[in-house]
Amino acid sequence: FRRPEAPSLTQVPGWLGPMVQLQSFDTFLEEADKLYVSAPAYTRYSMKYRHCDGRLVLKVTNDVITLTYSTDQASDLRRMDRLNAIFFARMSGADPADAESELQQEQPKSRSGRSKKR
Image (cartoon, rainbow, N blue to C red):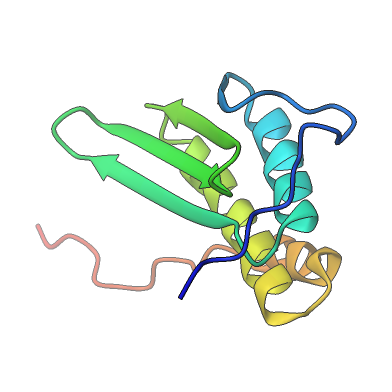
């Protein structure tokens, strides 16, 4: 069994190259979405968190282009939820705009628990 060839993305406008480390999360989000739309059958998304370093690495690839984003900021974890929502929506055939609006509507749960006893 021979795997079909991945589509050639060298002719795609705005092609970034084979391995790209992006510094801005918004740029990473846009480019990852474009990459998925251009080759949905070949695109994979992975995340790796190293607790000892406190570093999160997000990677999107289609075996031709690899986009990576690395951060050590806790605030970027919330943004990662946005990326997950977009990819889950795209992979399930739903509209990503609906997934983003649903994510924005979610309110953080208030802590209702025991108060400190003195």
